[in-house]
Length: 426
Ligand code: AMP
Ligand code: GLY
Image (cartoon, helix red, strand yellow):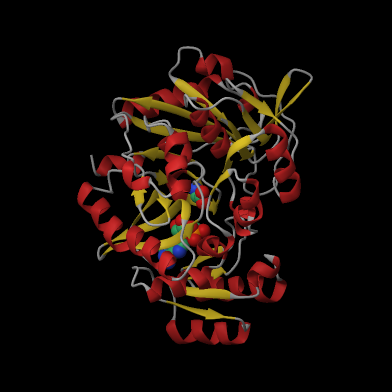
């Protein structure tokens, strides 16, 4: 079967890499892909615009594509699954109505309230003055969130009142998130440790993947501005077996059942961003896709065939599938451009990836790279996700950081403390 992967970041590199290992995969087209994806066995990068659904439909026919793996949320929220249904290809992801779980925070919060899914209490606002009055009434700490998609930047955790009021102004008065900030929600501050649970869903059955933990702040010790994610590891020992069973029972299954009852069965990857509080797991957010960089640590541990799992999701037969994993731990450390998540230079020469991968201990997923004249250059904020497996988390981290030491580009920044939170549980 020919497969089309939409996107060109580290997550999509990991998805294409895993799909390429399937016996069923013939050609893997990556639109637009990246230089790392271009080197994969069976892969070809093509310049089809993934947000132009008619162009994607034409490409599906032309290349006889049987399966489409959608990386980012934007095309899912815009209805790519609905738009491509008539092509007959299995387009893996939720339909537009189901993708609202990520695309609209107010939809997601109301949905959780309707189905008793544990999450922070909240209130939605379309008027800045009312939102500010609410802050005065309830006090801090609290969290201000733009309602729509804001590329991971729409959330402000406000520990003081001035920060909360500024976040309201930024979203609703200045309009820094565009239309995504016309409506905001203000929710209670949750205390605890975060974990990411990604799950496969076929509309009825939902099976969690191995647990993982992201590192969103830019700097060591969880300091600095929030980023797309600076590193991850799996499994996350904060998620014990008992806790995973509780998450399945109180979060994942009620979510899938609720979407089905409401007439928008959820097919695809359901990503639950959780806070593990002293009162149990609570949902911080739902995303409608694989996480980045969580995918880069979960898929390398998955020993089952991704293409078979995706087919089961798309055909409603996930109940016949069991997911298998290596017992090895996996960690990924993101190397980012100087200044990320603020402005950063592009076009810096990258060296050392072959050396890092030479003895097979590190695996480098490309996130923001491009090739010019045979030279590999930086082209994004997050540039590489340097990944390793190992018998223990400690060994895994050593391997990933050994890999990083061999790679260089001007101004490269990365966190030195990926995975450290795990050790207090181990
Ligand atoms: P989100 O984009 O919704 O994942 O939010 C970004 C980050 O803000 C999360 O990873 C959390 O660290 C933090 N956050 C979001 N909501 C809350 C909350 N209710 N309580 C505490 N922290 C939160
Ligand atoms: N790692 C956070 C996300 O994918 O949204």
